Each structure stands twice: as structure tokens, then as C-alpha cells.
Length: 107
Image 1 (cartoon, one colour):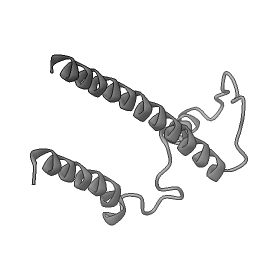
Image 2 (cartoon, helix red, strand yellow):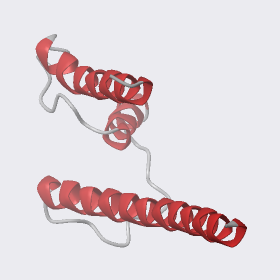
Image 3 (cartoon, helix red, strand yellow):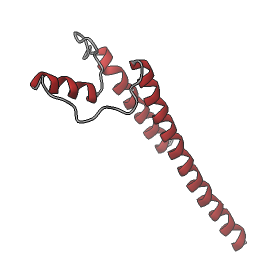
Image 4 (tube, rainbow, N blue to C red):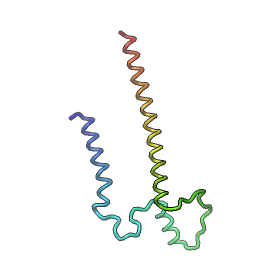
């Protein structure tokens, strides 16, 4: 097994552990919504500390449910990953093309 394959396998196992361990250890048990985002936790902390707090502004678009909000977030993440993958793919292709062109020019 090459060094890169070992590193990739280790990283894959680490990501799997990060995804499974919170569920296996029961870190979210006993809560109404165990894995809420930081925004929801901050809102809960603010309303607990200052019940009379009034937000400065409201969102431009409020999704009808948490599932729609999660789907929009996943779509945003997928689009961002696609743009990054395209960019790095184009850079690698240009580098390989330049290397191939210089190799043919030398021979």
C-alpha cells in the first residue's frame, strides 16, 4: 500500500469516527433536538438570559420547515464543493498539460 493510500484510508476512518462517535456515545440524548446548529443554541441562550430581547432584523426568507432549511444548507454545501472541485481540477489539468507540452518540446 502506498503512502498516499495509507493517508487516505486514515483520513476516511477519521471522518467515519467523527460521524459515528457522537451517535454511539449518546451525546445528544435527553434533548428535544439533540443536534441543533449553533444559531439555534445561541438563540436559546439569548432568550434564556434576556427574555425581552428584540432582534434587530428578521431573515429575508424563512423556510417553512427545518427539513427545507437543512436541504437548502446541503444544496449550498454541494454547490460550494462542486465549485472548489472544478477549480482544483482545472488547475491540475493545466499543470499536467503544461508538463506534457514541455516534455514534447524537449524531445
